[in-house]
Length: 418
Image (tube, rainbow, N blue to C red; front, side, top):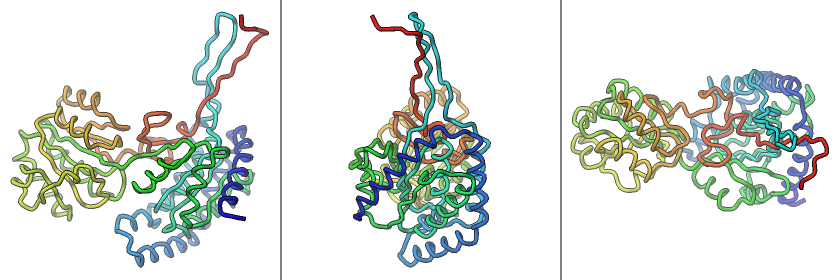
């Protein structure tokens, strides 16, 4: 059987499983989720051994520090993966919610009700915890899933998928509800994203190259986020001490993630005072600064920024710095260079806050907080399946509700159309 035929078979099996999942009761779903979480814990050592193989291979192949960080499941990462599955039990079932209802003059009763999307494909790189997050989220929302992880996390992904499958089967997980595409062959991606008869949506999570390839070649709908070029604007009325803490957190805590800040915009009236403080804080943390002319004059250690820097998602300890003449110029810069992911304004001026929140076009807009909070768990959504910068269907962190669509239920008493 060819690779394309194998993938088509996955799709057919997933479609059959989706029909069963769509009508599964909440109590049974929750019982299966609890068993999945228990089995992840029971297989902790096996999963970490598999992860160690991937980490060793990644270092030998020259993966960047940011990529290695994404790959590593040790410590709190493993606990977070288990909790991400277990915490879904406490969240409301998103399926079967009555979104609205009304009665027409002719007596027809119309209800708008949430239903699963059907079969969800997820293509992801580096982070093996996505295997657990995506599988559990799709399952709780009544969707079958087809998962395709990156080759750098192959052993980890297989071990996690085996644990989830084994745990779920003990409590009646329908066959083929969760399927991992167990190949590192890049040729597998194209037939997957063109399987429009058996796949309802594809969600790519990874680098710009992967996302662009999927968006350009898929024949099924794509829910994606473009690169995370996130900005923080520091207004003249900002609390500078808090601003320094927020900038450090947004850049340094985990620089290799999509919600890390890549550019800060500093209001001119405070530039002379504030930028040296930024330099003192970040240079000590090995952050490379790339700035406009004024920034370089105030921070001798900064490199001169190029036009490309304003477009760049560094995913590294590099920060672009630009001075602006107020909130309007900050908004204009973000409109030109932002990616629609997460943007923040630091200010105690209510008018500046309102202007920024209303005018900035992004999935998430912050006032006086780090961009690092753009995350399903931080938003109380449980684990997330991704962060969408699309404007249709889903935007921002995608939790359970974003994995549903809706249908209309219409009840009559014999009405016919005149």
